[in-house]
Amino acid sequence: MKNEIILVGSYHFEQEEELVDKKEKEVIELVDHLAQYKPTKVAVEWEMSKEKELNIEYKKSKGDYSIDEIQQIGFRLAKKLNHEKVYAVNGQGEYLKKI
Image (cartoon, rainbow, N blue to C red):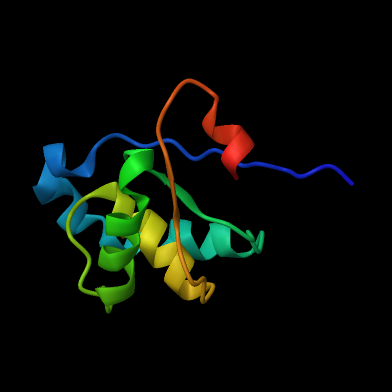
């Protein structure tokens, strides 16, 4: 069986902080929808060499997510699915080998 990958793109939320505050319900609906696919891994745009720091931040987050899309979507989805970690990806396709 081939692995399936779903890529979800978004703009950088911190550019529209006021808009995201008003749209939190929609972010939660998106996360709930993505969770129905039962992903086994969640990867976010982050410097791959700093994945350890990413996961320190992920593990200490308790629903008090910052305004950025990494936490609003990535962390929220991974937490909902009880994932131990999230994966850092950033590049021109090489990251697909990692996940």
